[in-house]
Length: 133
Image 1 (spheres, rainbow, N blue to C red):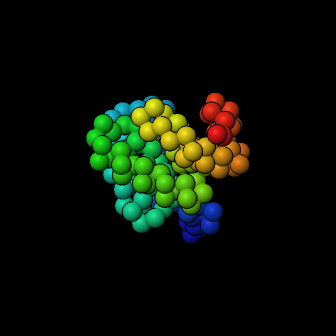
Image 2 (image 1 turned 60 degrees about the vertical axis):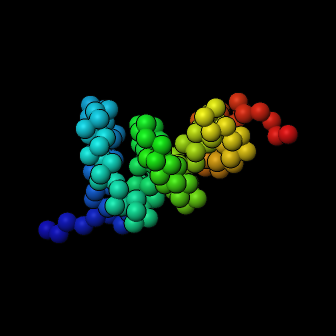
Image 3 (image 1 turned 90 degrees about the horizontal axis):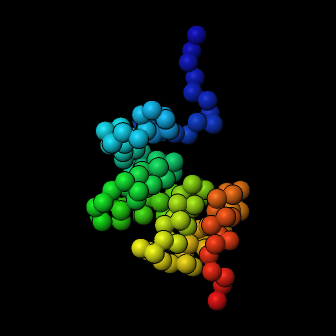
């Protein structure tokens, strides 16, 4: 009997393992697991795998205190968001609405895209933003 990977699965094995680790309730919060998952996501993200870019970008923006890593994380999130990744669009909208970045037009842009794809969280955040000037 042959084993066949479903055609709908576009993620590479390292990405699938990293996502499994990060999404595991028991494992996903441990720093050592996050570091391992980040290492697994690095090459697929560099190769243009959107899901890897999105998750690695989120990790770098949320979990790293290093400005260089956060900058790389933002770049990865932008790449994934431009490719249509709803999670990356939501995260960018959330980040740009924070006082640290405070770019309301950028926040609105990304949140509108995520909301158009059905993100209720993006719609909720959009309602909190100041109206267009």
